[in-house]
Each structure stands twice: as structure tokens, then as C-alpha cells.
Length: 192
Length: 306
Image 1 (cartoon, rainbow over the protein chains, first blue to last red):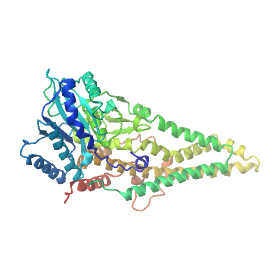
Image 2: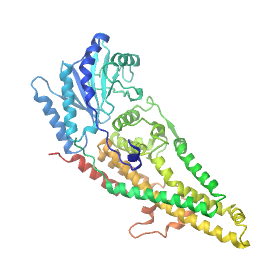
Image 3: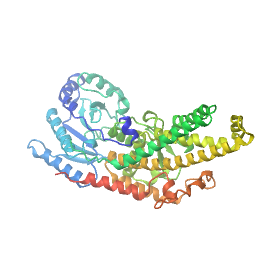
């Protein structure tokens, strides 16, 4: 935030950055060849749904848009304990998944709710059954890995390993304090 | 790109005017000091600025100690930390430290000299009374105080009052001998009127600064409400939290009533029509004002786009 805005008590909501999301398909290939992690075929957008009629209408528009294409099955919607909405979409192809996630973002932006976008998450799994989610932070335009191992534990070693493997392909989040824990995120739950 | 963020130019203009007046008051005090007593002016000015600087620099430690709050780790308070993590991510600001104060009074505060050294603290009373949506609204309000650098702004704004307050003290106690020595060239009785003028002027400056500070504080609260509501996009949650908190807070006196300030006597005079003594000297805007602003934001968020 600019200092002038801070002193005047103004707060322009920071817009979401969408571009880096399309690096995901290449990164998925790298993850599979280098670390043995395959995409589970789902992906989720996490955003804050505003109160009021406009947000409800926007959400209905998004679900209708994603359900409209004949290939994709239904979109699942859930609200987590922090009051954020998760929209889960399924596609075996990571590129198609990215297109879906991007569509959600574009509709939210068009309706003026772009500042409520928190993150996107695409889960991966390896042969040993370990789960890792690749999380995209909209405000930063960066990715970070999240590898839950239990109720409230995560595998930091694996996360840092994956960060280093993907560093050449995706903008990875350098500030470790921004690596939010997303316990019970759709597609990662039940990994205890 | 569409936005649902409405500007409040009136609020910004009023607040800028108040800050400008406070700045002018500070300049007037400094200039007055230089003309009146050149020998002591730099010392008094430096001590005043030193006090203000210390208040700002150690604001996080002092406030935490005053509220008997302790810092909590993510393991101790996972929900609270998770909430603040997400809000900081949405607002794109560094995560402050998190504290909990063990008192039944429902309250929350944020302090610290910069966003990087900030601490957000809640009481156990507020944790028990509010549901998670309402708590998030309160936290967003406090994080907005951090983002707006309110500790720095209020410290800068208070510097004129601090210097004036020091002059008053100085004039009351050892000042007599000090000031009469300074005007030794005059007649013998020359010291007393000079001291009285100094006392009167500094009291007036202090009084003006006090009223302006409280006005500025109320504007900053409204700004924090606004930014907080836009951050969570749930103005309704903050509104219901405010209703819950202020309803109980109003019943409990916040200050020790025995410690009535000596200055209070001076504020009966500027009882402008429409503004009572209470609204003029309170640090927070009235509940009606805050709810009205939140209702406007809610209407804008709920407005269907064509």
C-alpha cells in the first residue's frame, strides 16, 4: 500500500493476478517425471463470497458456466470453517482444469469480486499415497506446495523439495510465512 | 475491471483537514517557543519529540504489557492464526504477531510502529462472545489500523499536545524560577506575567489539540471499519460484532473514574450546538454512525451488475 493511501486511511483492494496460473500444465509434467506425483484430476478455487444478492447471483453464473460444457461433470461447492467458498471442478487434463479455474476468476473479476480471490489448489498424489497440493496465491501471483500428513501436520521437507524442483518453471513463493496451511482443503482431505 | 469499492471523498477531506490543523498547531507551538524563549526552546522541543518517538517506537511492548497480553503461536491458537493468515493474504500485508489478553472485557486492539512490527491482540472475552464471522470482521478492522499506520499517524498528531502539556507542567512546577531567570533583564515583576501567559497559551493549545485528536481518532476508526468491511466483504458481520461489543462495553466504564484529568474542566466551553461533550471527546464514532457506513457498503456489495 502506498504511504499516502495509508495516511489518508484509504485502502484500495489489491487486484488478483491471473497470468502465472497457465504455467501449471508444464509444472504438472515436471512433477510427474521428477518426483512421481500425478494430478488427481481435480482442482479448486478458494474465494470469499461477499454477502448480498449480487454474490449469490455471481456464484450461480459460475456454476452454470462450468456445467455448460458437455465434457465436464458437475461443480462441487463447499464452505470451509473460515468462511471461504471452495469451488471444485474435475478434469483429467490439467490444461482443461486451468481453463476452468481461469473461467471462475474471470467471472468474479467481471462482477467486481476479484479482490476476494484467495487461492487455487490442484492436488497431486504419488505411488506411496502421499498427497501434495500446488497452491496458487492470487495476490502474489506465486505458487507454493502444501503437503499435509495428518490432522494438523505437514511434510516441510517434501514441500521444500518440490519448491526446488519447480523453481525453474513456476514463480514460487519466496516468503515462507505466506505458505498458508489449508487443512481439509477439497481433494486433500482424508490424507491422515 | 469492475470494482465495488466506493470512495468516501468527504471522509478523506475532513480527515485531511484535521491532520492539517494539527500539523499547523505543532508548527505554531514550535515557532512560538523559538520567539518566546530561544534558550530553552530546543530542549523542550527535543524532549517533546523524544517522548512522542518513544511512545511510537515501543508501542507494541507497552500496549501488550498494559493489557497483560501474551503472544500466542499458531499451535496454541490455530483458528485465530488461520483467520489472520487468510486476511493478510487477501490484503497483501505482512502477518503481524498475535496476542491474547486474559480479560472478560470484549475488546481487541492493534499496535506497533510499522506493519512489520505490528501486533494484533484480542481478549478472551471477545473470543467467547463473537462467532467466527464476527471475529473475522473485528480482526479485519484491526489489520486495517495496522495497514493505515494509525499508531504513527496518531503519534505525529499528538506531538503538539505533548509539547503543550510539557509546557503546562513546566510552568506549574519548577517553571517559575526558570522563566523569571530567563527574563532577568526586565523589572522584578516581569517573570510572573510571562509565566501566566505561557500557562494560558499552552493550556489553550493543549485543549485544541485534544479536541482535534479525538476527532481524528473517530475518522480513523471509520476508515478502519471501511477497509475491514471491504477486506472480508461481509460488512454485516462487523456490524453485528460492533453491536455485541459496544452494547456491553457501554455498560462498563473503561477508565478509572477517580483519575479525572485536570484538563476536563476546559471542555465545557466548546459545547457547540448539536455536539455534546460526550460526542466531542469520545475516541470512537457512535454506533449509529458506524452501522450507517457499513450499511452503505453492504448495499454496494449487494448491488446486482447489469
